[in-house]
Image 1 (cartoon, helix red, strand yellow):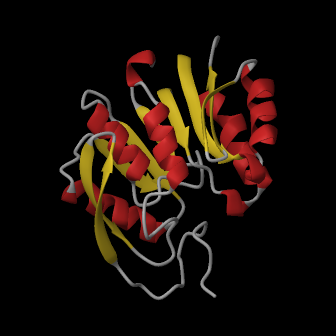
Image 2 (tube, one colour; image 1 turned 180 degrees about the vertical axis):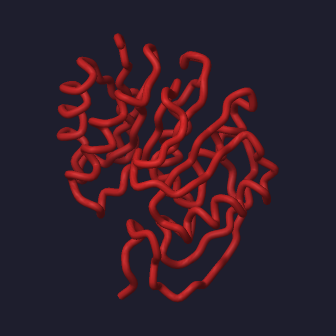
Length: 203
């Protein structure tokens, strides 16, 4: 049994593969590997999140993808608005190497990819938007840390947007986001995947 994806150095034997898919009207070729999240295809929840996002509703500024994996969310956001820089972070070094490779393969340049345990080494102070398909297997405490600490990294008017399945704690996440931000809305629901969004309303 291989170790799970929420680790900095997966011990699973490398078995790289590549495949092509469509996200938000863009064709992507993704390189993936053992020891990374959703290696066979883009996770359905990530697709639901991307389909729910309208970047014109966000203030100006950079975006952050927390737990970027091999890059589907962050790279799609970067393609959707080439005037923004998308910072992409993950703890999994194998996933980060793949994200770098996928950025190059798909001609995405307005990104910054680096290792970080959640927000630990995030370089920009404030973001217009923070996005995450949080690492459920890392446990509720880690997932809620993604939610709790996001507010300190958002500009006023910026949004936190996450995807989480109902059976994996969506109601609990919704409650936590409401506590932290004073607001939360479910902007999409598909096959049990909830897309939750909170807005930072004051400094």
